[in-house]
Length: 98
Image (cartoon, rainbow, N blue to C red; front, top):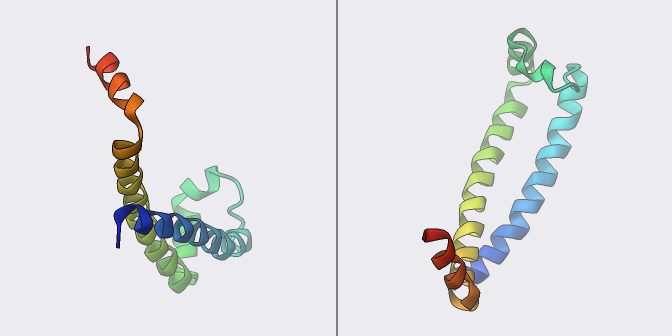
């Protein structure tokens, strides 16, 4: 399978994984009253979340790893596409490397 085609599938899976992650995380964070950004940095509140919802939290960690892998695939595919189809990118490289 070509890298560009695999990158397209990875982009679709990336968006789907983000949607699933948000759907899973939002009820958990609202249940533990972590809707403000500062609350997620509070170690006491986060320890309660990790202890009570450990399975959901571990699944979210797996989704985070999957998001990282998919992001790398999309980036490699975009790099290959830019290398083949963007003749002006070479001009930009010459301008910015001087």
